[in-house]
Amino acid sequence: MKPRLALTMQFPAAKAYPSHKAVLPRATVARWIKAALFADAELTVRFVDEEEGRMLNRTYRQKDYATNVLTFAYAESEDDPVAGDLILCCPVVEREADEQSKPLAAHYAHLIVHGTLHAQGYDHEVESEAQEMESIETDIMQSLGFSDPYVPLT
Image (tube, rainbow, N blue to C red; front, side):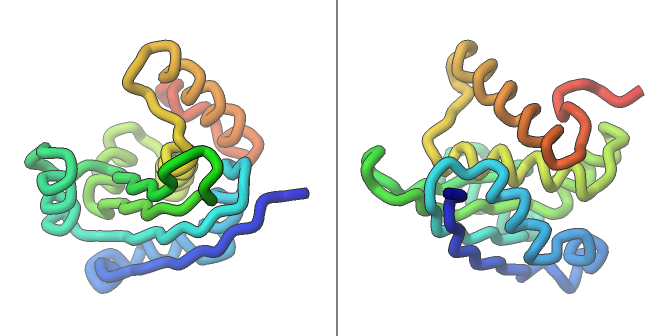
């Protein structure tokens, strides 16, 4: 049986980034998340501007810059349901997609898959864990019809 998803989406940055909201319909974001879920989950996906992204990264990670995706996972044990917030910083995602010559939707899909895996306890701080997580991400992205996000486009 496929995992169930309770999804909340928030677009406070939507006015400034209407082209982003256009590539992020709820059904599409839900499909990307469900492809990366291994258990039922309750997730909020919030799309923010650079100011909010920087403040959150500084407050919770002590890094004074906006990053592409932040994941706040709330399960305290493996027995707890998957619950979390994925925060995506629109200008950073757009800049990275341009730099990597990737379609905006493809980069969002990758970062949402990446964040969803983090919400389930996956990490990439240790090389062996990073390899496992990247392999899972690549398989999921390819199952969604995207190319390997870790292979540069030529």
